[in-house]
Image 1 (cartoon, rainbow over the protein chains, first blue to last red):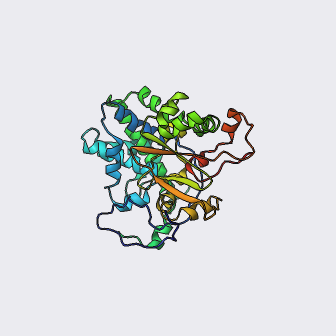
Image 2: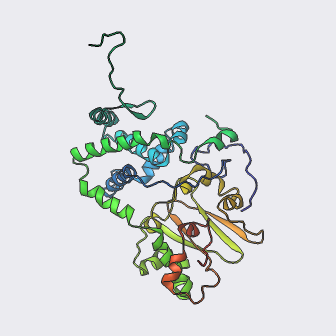
Image 3: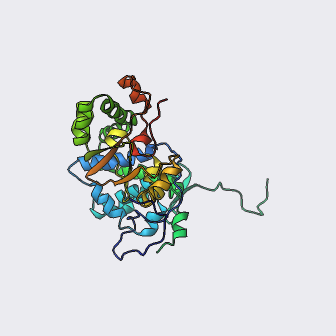
Amino acid sequence: MTSDAPQGQPEGPFRGYHDIGGRPAGAVAKDEYAFADWQKLSEAMRGALEAKGRIVSLDEIRRVFESFGEDLYNTLGFYERRAEALTVLLDEKGIVPRAAVLARMEAIAAMECRQVDHVTKTVTNKPTISPPAGSAAP
Amino acid sequence: MTSTPAEMSAIPVIEGYDGADYYALMTRALHQILLEEGLLAPEETDKVIAALEAPRPEWGARLVARAWVDTAFKARLLADGASAAAELGFTIKEAQLVVVENTDDLHNLIVCTLCSCYPRSLLGQPPWWYISKSYRARAVREPRAVLEEFGMALPESVHVRVHDSNADMRYLVLPRRPAGTEDAREEDLARLVTRDSMIGTAQVSAS
C-alpha cells in the first residue's frame, strides 16, 4: 500500500457509486454523535425482521441503497440510507406499501402540529395561524 | 451525475445528517405499522436493541490485554479471532474475526470502503468517522495522510497495511504493548486500550 497523494481517476463503466475506496475526498471529520434512538429502532426493526425467517436481509438492504441512485446515496446519511432502503424493500416485497408509511408519517406529524415534505425530506413545525392581513382587530 | 474531485471533497462527512428528522419519523411510522400488522412484537425489537447496545470497546480491550500477557492466547487469537474471543465469553456473530498484529515495523489500519463493516458484536457501533465517506475513500489511497490527521506520524520505515473489511471478514488490530508496562496487570493493561487503537488510528500509550 502506498501513500500517494489523492488524484482524480477515470471511473470504470461498471464501478458502483458506493464503491468509493480510493476516490478523492476531504479531511476526515472526527465529530462524534450519539447513537440516536430512532437509529437503534431502525436497525433493530431490520435485525428483528431478518431474525424472523429472513423477511429482509442486510444484503438486500445494501442492494437497495446501492441501486436507488447516486443523488440519494450522496445526500442521505448512513442510517438515513438504511431506513430509506428498509421502506423501499418492504414495499418491493409487498409486505408494507410505501404509500402507507408516508401516509402514517403525515398522520403522526399532524398530531404533533408538524408537517412533512416528502420531496425535500424535511419535517417542520406548522406555521401558526395568524389573522389575515387587513382584518380588523376587535 | 458525475462528481469532480472538488465536489467529492465538498461532501460532508455526516452526509444528510440534517435530514434525520424525516427518517426518525419514517422509522416511527414503519414501526407502528409493523406492530399493527403483527409482523413484529415490541419485545422483538427490544431484544435487538439490547444486543446492539451491549458490545463496547472494553470487550475488545480485554482480548488485547490477554494477548499481551499470554502468548499462547495471542497465537490462538491471531489464528482464529472468534474462537479466542469465545474463550473470554464474547460471541462474534456477524462474520469471521481476523486479528492483525502491529509490530515495530508494521502498522495495520482497518476500513470498509464499500459500506461500514466493523466488528460490531465485539466493539459496538463504529465511530462516525469510520462510516464517513472521507475515511472510506481515503484510507486505502493515502493511509499515511489519514493517520497524520489522527495525530500519528509514522516513520517511513514502518510499513502500513490497510485491510478492507467485507461481509465475511471483520478486522481487529492488535496494537503494540506500550513500553514501560512490563509489570502491569492484565486488567490495568485493558484500561489503556482504546477503540481507535483497535482500528489502527491510534497507538496505545502507557498512561
